[in-house]
Image (tube, rainbow, N blue to C red; front, side):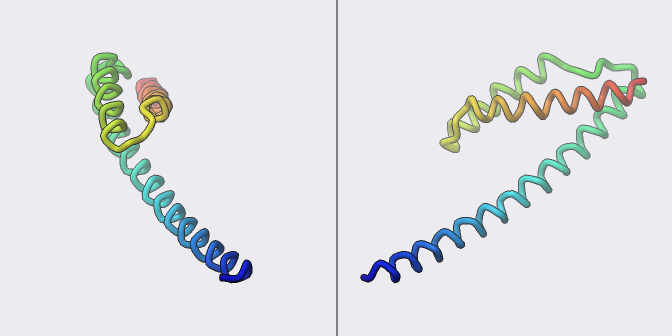
Length: 100
């Protein structure tokens, strides 16, 4: 194969990978939006019943669960932990705002 043919083939493969990444990014955004809709409902329920905005036992359980899922998915558990830590902090922040 010529260098031009190889370059064209590589460009096609790259375009396909990027299209897959774009679809996955959309799935992540819509999934995250749905997750936050659920946590907002939890926050409203907690506020209505004067429950604390955070639940350390639940958070620890979720962290362990997510780390196990990451290992099963062949994803770096440290990355999964950073991701969930960020999400939990945002959820707690939203829950605290609802309680004011």
